[in-house]
Length: 513
Image 1: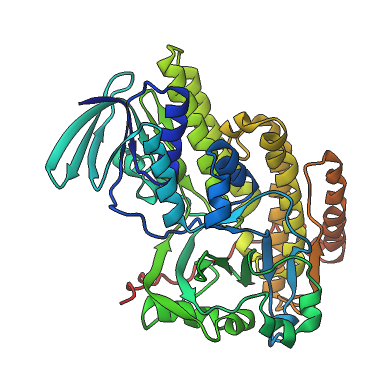
Image 2: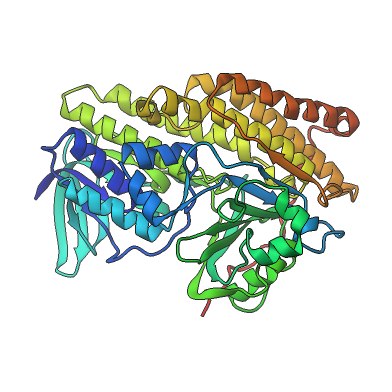
């Protein structure tokens, strides 16, 4: 049986492509093949401003999100040192007021099912539960997809195959394109918890009244980050009361606890931090909902060809800090639909394929250099993260968020840093990220980490889409310059020092029982 498009994976990435294709080309025969009978919860629960726009204005999910998910109130960071014994004593970074642009905390099982339902309602066919055994690529011709389902193997053909298989990276693994980013050796453990304290709850407000009054927005529906040397944890509330909590750490800097179940090790690690210990005082892990992934960062050498395209995590994954995953899904789904639509109109796809590969490959590696290379060296330092966060956030608003909100959603075809105009921001961000990492290394070597991690509060008024807000970058830039003159000069002639040496390898944790 022949289709115009076969999409591997029916979650957000694949269902979005199907929706966009059927909307613009209602005669296309689109088949979605999904391995699961029902979606389960997964990571990638927090949206940011660009993905919020994609979900609400492009996919039309605004009312659904308002009714079924939680509004997100920005990002918040919590730090500690030996002088911190409770939540109010921890240094804090985050917004002072409500955020200006929509974003959400999403239960992905609920969101993915709804996006898939709408894709089917738009005319896409759905086959589930089936697995894809193999894809035979034929550039410029019909692609062959072999399925394995309850009725036995079945062979289908399509002009286009969209790989939205997520971390399974089906095509990238099959074709030998998948490469791990060894310069960013992160690992993660996560699960959902019940009974986590409410950051805005009456008990904490009564216990720490001055702390509660300092912030005029809700802390609880932010993506709270509790951070330490070489690691950070996310705290994402979900509709219904569960809280997604996970740890991401640089394996060169953090020695993960040994012994016991994965859930016990996650709880042990988190409770070393006084803020996490207080928030988890009465909490328990949801049984069976504990996960582990090692070596998170990877990228395909190829994202598209004449007959196939990789979207979302099927093509790459970098780091969950700042919740960028759905931004990349938005760009990939929009550009994939445009590429397939151009071929259907009879356009020459060769230059479009080349532009797709260049944008996503360049964007990925620029994002790594600008945001994440050795960032875990300084993630536990309040004063260094304050500078980086204000600059990262401001440049995100001015350089990435501004275009789709002001110029229109058609600009979503480009991933962050994937366009030539991003070069100046890439250069500046790579520079200050590299310098802050070098300063943190020097502090670690001299025993001076964490000195500002207690009793400091940096609550910001936030950025808008007004270009005049570029002036708000001056304050963190001045803080960076002052830091270099006070302290950074010690590393100016050390070639930024060396990254942390890797810790001895440990076996992967055993799954929780």
